[in-house]
Length: 263
DNA sequence: TCCTATGTTGTATG
DNA sequence: ACATACAACATAGG
Image (cartoon, rainbow, N blue to C red; front, side, top):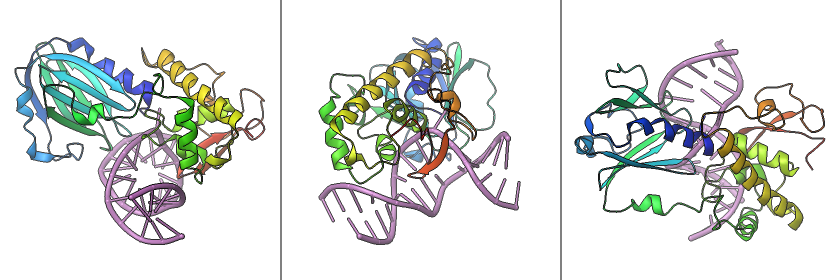
């Protein structure tokens, strides 16, 4: 489920336990979400305080004490929940962090997510090395154009999913962006005109802003004026033209678009 | 039974 | 070395 704004929504789910002390940690090391297996001592969190949380693209980082960092990626089906202290785990709960008053839960049926623990004075290197946030000044139109050229032979839909340049964009956001920019998802990236690239840049920023405003705070429902509510199954119609939407495979991912509207 | 799923990575190929 | 395409991962639900 989680793209940019959904990831931030899940980050917020743990906030009720902010400031609290970690009493114990329970996890199932054999779950593939723990990539390092037994090499990591999760007991190191015990006694530290849950200090802070961060979100970048599809990644989250939680700070415990002065030097313990928990990195979380939700994969396809990961979720974070905050439960009462006496919570009894259910199937697919892979990590429980029990604090003074709460149980912080990582739940992930398909186990495509990833959890990693780090010990360092400042932010872990992998966190600092992430590409610029799409809503920051460090992401400029020239960065977009340069990347479109470098990935010129791939369809634009597939290129928008590349996290090295577009952190946080996932399948529904890519469709939403291309629909708003009126660009056909199968177009080769290098085929976009200057004007289309400028439009694409604006829509990338707009969709990120809109998603963070509508979805991140409380999983709000996007309005029917977006493509969002119309893209999930066959038979939808374009909110702009009323014409039928089409669902195809692009780069191995289901892609919904409006042939009458996108060029 | 078969197909699909809001993601990433390893591998083969050009 | 770089770019591209796609199978594989694991599980639930329609």
